[in-house]
Image (cartoon, rainbow, N blue to C red; front, side):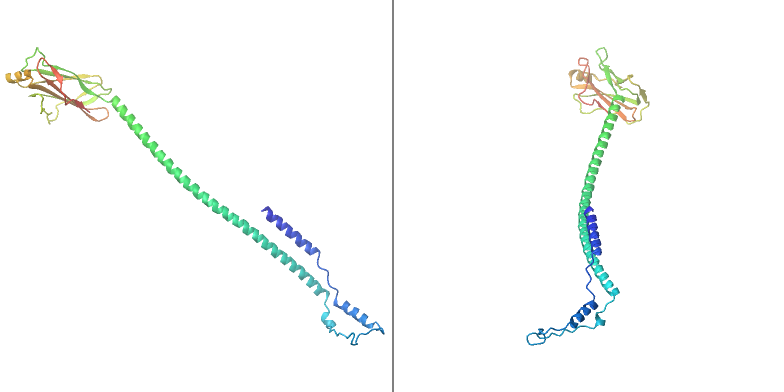
Length: 300
């Protein structure tokens, strides 16, 4: 832009100088004719040989005086026209140069615009990639936070929920009649919150040892439901509804049969989830006593 301003200033200076120094005007035609007449009026010397073979005459046809007579206004008009033509020529050249300079800077501006558009596109694509990466990172963070919250919730639930389990079991010792033993399962809530709607069931049966079939809890609705607070205890007592036959007592003592005691405790914890505790004991006579069976001891 500074170069363009300098060029315009130089062109303006050149125009001013041309206007101040116009070309020298030609002498008027009338004065030329008067000079010619003065020459004709001079006497011809005797030695003048014009008009002979050695110096033949040359006839020059001159225009009429009226045709060559111009007024001062016409001469001024011609001078102004010449000056205007010079100014127009210089202005045209200057305008052409300025147009060339403008075309050059327009080309540079176009190139800068193309580069800017390319940079803007690359920046937009980079920002889009960064936004996608940011969204992916945010999603992963949210998923991690949800997993952490779930783990914390599960941990809190496991730490605070009720755990109703078998604390101990007794029965059928040597002092009892082996044909009609009685069994007791002692339960305790080992959790930190109460257990609601506690229902207990116990089944006793004589089966081969090892057993292949066990009694199942009844399908009927329980008669009562209890609540067991933290660190509170209760027990379940079970016995045969009949005496064992002498043959069954001999088989139990001999190790071919056994009395199986199955217990089930259902309850609802403080988080509203239903829980179940299963226990399975076996009695193989007064010598071996009451023991946990190899299967059937689990819970939720």
